Image 1 (tube, each protein chain N blue to C red):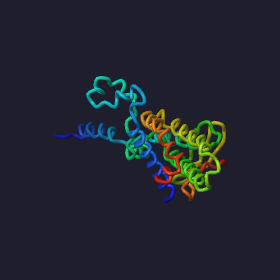
Image 2 (cartoon, each protein chain N blue to C red):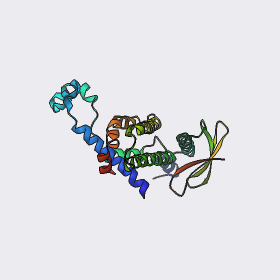
Image 3 (tube, rainbow over the protein chains, first blue to last red):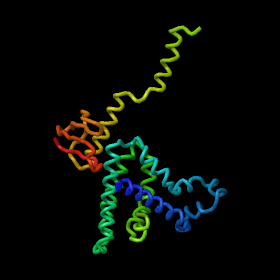
Image 4 (spheres, chains in turn purple, red):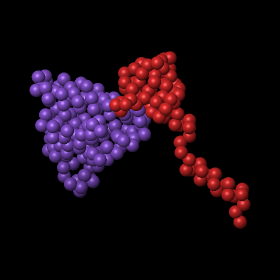
Length: 152
Length: 84
């Protein structure tokens, strides 16, 4: 089923995004450089390690999205439909020779993420935090033709 | 010896413990789901106050603002809210 495959691809994009976050240089901010030091240091300063986003486990996120009780079946299906539609817009953008900037798709992407967050934040705040934390990483995949094609 | 009264005393707490969500809780979840999906599809509603099941994944939702929608999954697998 194409729709299911597309959602799977989005999740793969999530995974790839997370992998990117994981590999990002930690020396960019002072708190990040502290966290780059292994376990011994992080135990001493647990407050700074709390600020860091843990690497995203795609399989776990997929399961959490599927099984969260924060949203019902109809809502999950409508969100999946809208994710598929957005991915189709990206696909069309890259297939049409990119006459316009991909930035034009940033607003619909942000809108969709906000919709998801507003729907899950009360019932599943932990999931909302995970999605929010991976927002830029996912965009980085979607906005790059090569990365997008490699995951779809 | 296990008297009927004792058996009931044992069975009742277990039944309560393992029972699924009450119909009222399921209804509340369905109304919330229908409210969310109508909002997500950009239809005015406010809040779904009641729903009537037509078939599997097919409900008539009545909104606080008086609007009624048929919410269902169409043949293409899309969630649809159709104003009645």
